[in-house]
Length: 375
View (cartoon, rainbow, N blue to C red):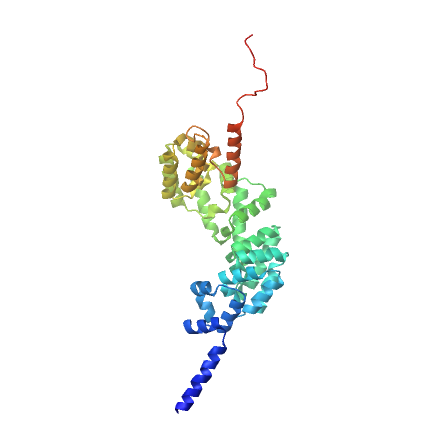
């Protein structure tokens, strides 16, 4: 009996010793994992510990297609480093059936035929590519619908990548929302010839607008009309807000408008003009607005300056403090000058800052030119 036990233990020990070291450690530390999946991911240089921490359940699935995912991506031109990054971030990809992956590849290439670009999209939005096969029909129908609207292929690709739910849902829902957007644009005075361009800009800025019910859009437009915006002003406002007009609701807008008017001490007509220049005031909550007003005032900027350049309120307090510090180092008084130099994106600020620097370094007079004496 003891001999049999000894023999059994000996065989088990030889079996364990035959396994690679990292798998012996895995088997010891983590029970129930699919060791073939772990091994395949390890061979692809995927961070196993990261997968365990974020998506450990994937490693416990009995069926996985890790090598098949790797072959597909490699065949599309993806280098090993990108494949390992994709699988570390979205290990669920290994659960997709090979036929499903190939079907997705063919589907996406109808709007993004460049495989290198498609690999870049998969790297950024892996969940959008490795999706359930139950959505394939909806995806195909939605692609066909948006192509029928003559939308740019890049716009359709961006929609599929950043808002996959809009392509997974039945095409009828997207048709209803697009119809509502088109109708609103035309009712506000937009021209039929410009609908396509307007719609492309709107969807590229906020693809999630397709997931909203049309009633939200109509309710928000009605509220803004009741506030006093004219039809022409509403068209301007909707164009600047892009699809974000569907993200709002009357109660939050009412509170933000009341706070802004009370803080700036302006009339309703003045507030509407400010909103037309800075629509963001409609969707920033009161606490965010309070923080940004206080930061600007604390820096020595007057309320009249803010009202003249309200888009400065779109900047976070950290960005405002940093830019003001840089301007002061150059001797620029933000409390006396224009806030336009403080405004805009990082790139715009650097351009404006450079121009300001050149102006300060330029001589006040031409030393070569003769001085004009008294007549």
